[in-house]
Image (cartoon, rainbow, N blue to C red):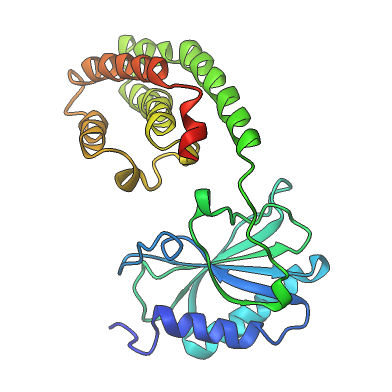
Length: 262
C-alpha cells in the first residue's frame, strides 16, 4: 500500500528543512523532469546540493536522517565516485512509495565549475535556496560546445566505419546475441546520435534520453520500428536500413546550423 504522507513535495520539504540550516551548504535545487516541466507520476526526484568541498560527504547523513523521519529508507544505491565528476551521488527509495519515486541525490563541490545548470542543455533548474547567490546559472559556451560536437561528428563516422562490420560478422557466424548487442550499441547508438545532431544538437550526447520529446514523431516511430527486430531473418535488413539512414543523416548535418539552434 502506498504511503500517502510521502509525496514529491513532502520529500523536497524535509530535505530543504534539514539541509538549508547547514552553514557549509550553499544551495539546493531540482533538475530532471522538473527542469523540463515534464513531471509526472513516473518521475524520480532529482536533487542537487552545492556544499563546501571538504564537507560534501557530510551532507548525506543529514539527508538520510531527514528522509528516514518521513519513511524508512528501503533501498540505497551509492554511485562509485568518478575522478572526472565534481560531485557524489546516491539513490534512495522510501518504504511504501512507488518504485518510480527514487530520490536521485547529488552533492557538488562548491569549486566544481560544471554543475549541469546551463538552461539550454539541462532545462530551468528549480532552486529551493541559493544563499547569497552562491551558485550562478552559467551561460552556455557555444563556441566550445560546437567545437566538441564537430570533433564528435568526425569520431562518430570513424567509429561507425570501423565497427559496424562487426554486426554482419556475428550474423554470418549466427552468433545472434552478439549480433543484436552490437546492432543496438554500434548501429542504432550511432544513428540516434546523428539524428540528435541533426534535429536537437544541444542534446547530441544524451543517448536515447528524452528522445520521444525532442525528435520529430515520424523519426521516433521509424526508430521504434528499427529497435524491435522480429526474428533472426529480420535483423540483416534492419541493419542495412539503419546504416543507410546514418550515412544520409551525417551528410545532411549542416555544421553551421547548430550555432543557430543553441
